[in-house]
Image (cartoon, rainbow, N blue to C red; front, side):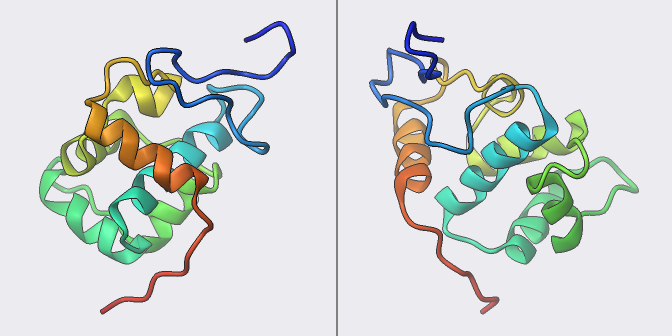
Length: 128
């Protein structure tokens, strides 16, 4: 945290400050959910499509739905590690980013994609 009280993203990325609404406890369900939503938006897909893309990478017997994703993204529920790993496989992020907001070990193209999604206006996605 900088002396001004505003959290900074990894200096290595040069992405500046975290937008309003993301500041606060970076480990809370809400903050983790916001990073999940940024990740989904960075892929340019809706919640249902994200759920479909995650399904093949989930442990046997686990299912994902758009509603379940929404609960994680809104911070109502904390995403389990097994599902977070599936997000990593699908989106190219890592667990440090999801759970700790650490950007330093992200590949530059993924970090740029996330930053663009984080700073772009929210768009509504429709299922094709």
